[in-house]
Figure 1 (tube, helix red, strand yellow):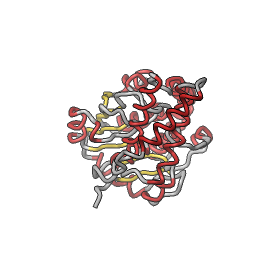
Figure 2 (figure 1 turned 30 degrees about the vertical axis):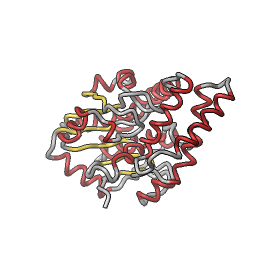
Figure 3 (figure 1 turned 90 degrees about the vertical axis):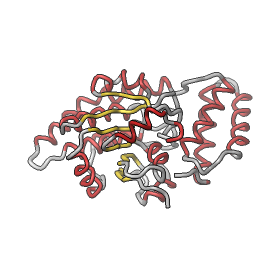
Amino acid sequence: MNTSLDCMPCFMKMVIREARLACPDNEALQNEIVMAWGHKIGNLDLQVPPPEIARHLAELIRAKTGCGDLYAADKRQANDKVMQILPRLQDMLEEERAKKHGDPLALALELAIIGNYIDRGVDIEVDWETELHNVSLGIDEAVLDVFRQQIRDTTQILVLGDNTGEIVLDTLLVKELQRLGKDVTYAVRSFSVINDATMDDAEYVGMTQLCRVVESGVDTPGTVLERCSADFIGQLERADVILSKGQGNFESLEGRKAGVFCAFKVKCKRVARDSGLPLGSSAFVITKMSD
């Protein structure tokens, strides 16, 4: 998926927010950063996915302020907040498993998708805790059936992680896949970008104790193939099934790598239009190559 004019308002809101985070007491420098970004974005190639554009913003902020992980406190808070409610969600899954016609895999997917709302890269306010409490199964049953068929006769599943907070809910999904006898590898970002999960977060929430965790090599808030390490590209090619979490990963892979199962919340009008799904809906789709 390339970057469209519809993405521009989000990038301008992001630079203002991040400039204020990086230098909260220096309005002159905030203005300098915003002006510099306005000039820079006008010279970038918009044929790349939006997460690739976001990388340039992160580089600009670091160059101007020396600040690295702007969202460090936010990420820890998000992980802690979800970890506090995790036991209740685990109970919910056990209750689903006990039902005669229960579907714990579908429920684990839905819970993990709701976690994708915890995204500082989009300007959206959602009560995701209430949605978790009142969860209903809304993902595409046809795609879920294809997913079940593909994992039935395979072993290796590669899960592409996305945000902090969300990664805690992904532990439920990984456990469910392991109950089905699958060997799961979970991928995180190699560098701090927005509030995406890194190896430090995987260790903090216990994902590294649950399954193999690898770094993708990217410094982008999405699995931009050109930014992945050679080793990780090999893992993508060897995986029997790839399950991608998050809108940023969908934006990076749609049109560029076919056959990836993408699970995310639709959080902007552009993605809603391209996916054919309503804003706020739970998406479970399979990527296609561009025509």
